[in-house]
Length: 241
Image 1 (cartoon, helix red, strand yellow):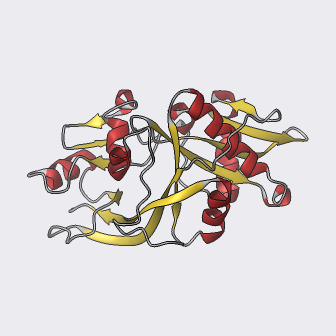
Image 2 (spheres, rainbow, N blue to C red):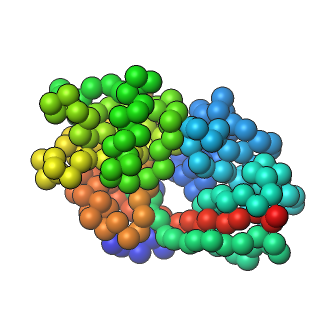
């Protein structure tokens, strides 16, 4: 993968890409404001919707106090984009690197005739396919964040994809999952292109996040017409007890 240094970061025309530097915050302060719990410094989604906690800016006075108050003492929380020293009493329990990809003009989205809409009645099956394939965090009400679709074979949900974070002008494609016995059939790519098609129909542009170690998925997204915009650090921390 190319190095996402400031000189090589891809800036996509027709949308303000700066909001992508803090996508969760701009989702909760914008199109997803109805889900937001918190204050002007720190916001989060309800636990049964998504695990994400967003900070307006890490250098804001009082941000760590607001974060601790929001999630409670001794709580484990995932943070994105902070790569400095944590305050005294905060315990780092895990760290990782992720990548952010955005659509380019090479992307050719299209609707898929076999894709079906998923909703509340499908929540248990959606949780089950996520459990089988581990594409990333998915909660009982995550489907409320956007449009989710899937493909059934023999009545069983075997592939899924949908919309998650929604900073102004952009929509994140997420929960891309295909069961092992139905891989290498292009189902995931078809669903990603369908989701991207409907994102573009609304006037938004598509983005994706992936673990930097998931090189197979990143390569597949690049073949579809996505390009690396930036790398970011993810940390799992425990608040002071």
